[in-house]
Length: 193
Image (tube, rainbow, N blue to C red):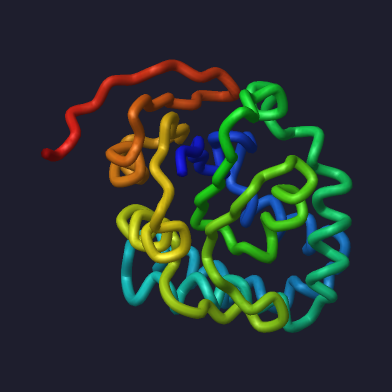
């Protein structure tokens, strides 16, 4: 089946949804400040790739133990859905829309449902604990997950903000588009034979 494939963060949403969600939760629940010292250390280690990035990401999301994550996610998107870029809202829906993201599925599922996304593939994370099941869904892991979950799909258009991080999914598209601050531009890349 033919579909169009989109990254989420900085492609159809202007920033990193995980970070904005954390700040949103912190604003609503100042008690989460108690997690901050450990999270700062883990953010530094994560950004410098010091240690297992999947475990570090799980530690960053350990604050979920202290909140009603389902309610927080709903409240978050009630306030932030307006930031979805217009090009995505008005996309061609003649082909199914697939979103593949490193952000947790529990965080993106409500907004993807609201936007009529046929399939979301993201990082599988326990919304009560922050523990990742499997691997962080980024780079080549995105291709692996796509092949695992929707093996009969091929992609007409692929959209992402990053050639560096999403080169592997760009290789899946017949046409490729780089998203920059809500604007899309077709790009031409050398694909492996």
